[in-house]
Image 1: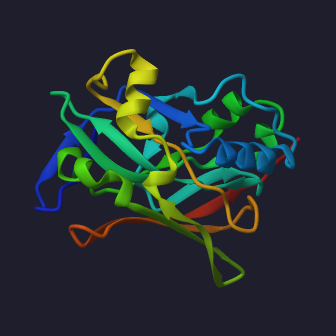
Image 2: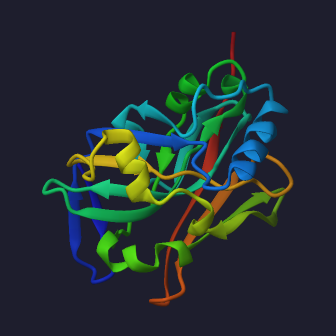
Length: 224
């Protein structure tokens, strides 16, 4: 069971039982190809289909501000996250598909399981943003050697609509209760790279608010 907050400071308990990562989820196929090539440079094979849905262990989802990861070859990817509660009501958070890039080079599916999946502790009701979804803006920064760098930025207009993702994944219009769906990421500015600190924001310019979450890495040694 995970406890989230709403903008009205009420508490929302959701036991996520299914965690899905939507990969290659850009609307513009040129953007999809750019991200595929970006990862090919790291040795990652092309996906078998786009979008592609990866099932991940539900206990990987966390709002912790410090993550323990193995080695120094993992990095974050900002994403909007759609969550269905016990009654099937939809909520929105901002998350990071934190991924081990070394493992990703030989298996994307395995790499998705290796790292925790951070998510904001605050959620918005989806119906409050559904009509202006494309105007929501994703923005992430990395902090490397004390220097903050813009890492990703763009509107949700560049990614497939979450309702479209739900239809493609389930074949219907409803996301099953107690399910979290990561809705795709943006191309990294300057290329994918590890960083000890990752900062992410989902901005709503219409309602004048943001979901934010920051986490730091505790690197565990790789021993043989």
